[in-house]
Length: 185
Image (cartoon, rainbow, N blue to C red; front, side):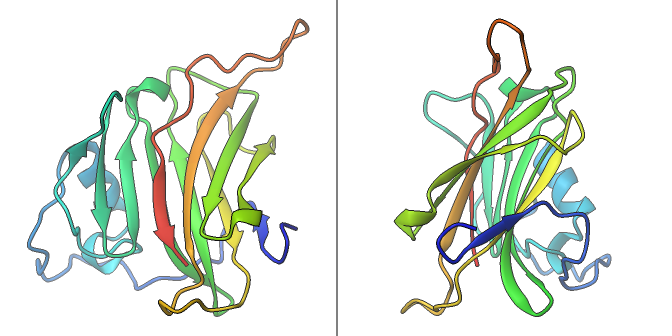
């Protein structure tokens, strides 16, 4: 529990509009690995909705990020050639949550992951250690506190992931933190 906001690992139960071929109503068409991921997650009718920006590079980082109506998707190749990190708002049991997903980290395989969560709620800025995920991917869900802010949302949350290995002489996290992605609850 994080001062009124719980974070849980997700194995199911997240709802969004059903995936379909869509009407092609998005003015911007995602492409490449980000576009493939977006299509896999339902495209314009899925968790992310339509893109609100074109893909863009990040200063002093490998990879690219793209903004969507309901979150962000980024390609973060320093953590794996096809590594995608994504955050989106969703509902579980009718309550708003923010979902963070990552992977695949191939060719890297990790013993555990650290997830840095940052939010509009300073007390919720926490780094979690997650050990019960597959070694190349995972999902993490934040349950924001129930007070709606002036903008009508429960707040903005951003995430980055770091893959680490247990070593007798000290743990190693060689590939560094992923690109950060953000979504509103």
